[in-house]
Length: 227
Ligand SMILES: [Zn+2]
Image 1 (cartoon, helix red, strand yellow):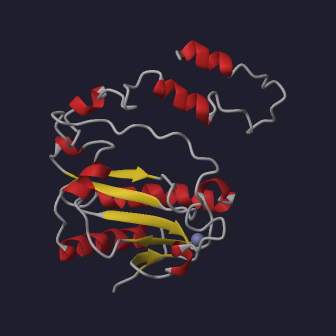
Image 2 (image 1 turned 60 degrees about the vertical axis):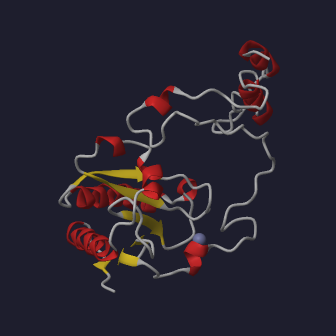
């Protein structure tokens, strides 16, 4: 099936769709069909240009694209929704290096490959799209202040900021510190390199996290938490 055929399947009248509830251009089945139309007999698509980029962490030799699975609807609930417990609500305080009345900034128990990975969460159970406006304003300022503090660390070139939200329904914004001088670690693949590179020494990671926490305390407010 080519894309034109898929589009014709999707010829639906959206003129009466209310604002913010416009239909997706492609339904899950139609989205799947566009991939199936170009995949080989095993359902695999060809390697993309990205796999030749200098930031891509794997060599092309022997690399294969995983077949795209058919859509599963309804989706499995995330942690913290559909009656599943919310680890972020339950784990109050664990790993916290900074907090104020509404937010916590945490590090994970074990360091990973990036020099510093931090996560910003609201104390109450909100996802990004149901965050009240006052907290949304605070989130914007906290992303800026936290990024500024991370980028002020010696030998750190960039703070990468990410929100995916597919595992847990409780908003969690990631900050990945990208080490200076490593062109290969630029961009989105740092989140994969983070899992491939050896762990940053814990004492170094913790010291950097505390510098960020104290900088946030000074520039934004709240309190740094020394363990
Ligand atoms: Zn929660």
